[in-house]
Image (cartoon, rainbow, N blue to C red; front, side, top):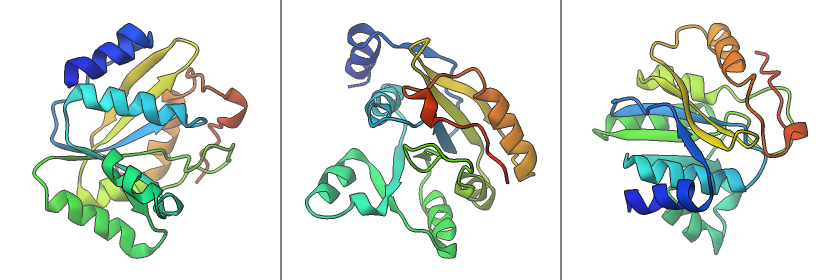
Length: 182
């Protein structure tokens, strides 16, 4: 399956894979920019060719009949906005020897001016690194920009992430904002 997904992504769809996925068993993987539903398809193919154990975080609104079955098969977990959700995700890490949680810190397809902070709190609570993944439609690249191994300060992490995404082009650039203010 790994080779098939890689062939579809690179051979048929023409994407280039850049950066090496780190040799780690657990992480929070952020993927940006997220301005199109196509991002999910390309991201899924990318992750499948890595052959790692992962789960996507998706809006809880997607988990209504009949779509909830598709999203669960797709590997998604619904997101609930409450204080115990971070504890729930940390528990998933504690109960698995290998797990990578994938999410879009933008939280939606439309342009926003404040990225969600949950990815940071999940990484800190679970004591796992943040893997900075990306999709660049102009260069037709997908991959890993960097790994932030010890996220200790939200402001510093957010500024570093903004710098990493500063040269990345979204499918719909008008919907992507690096204004990730705290």
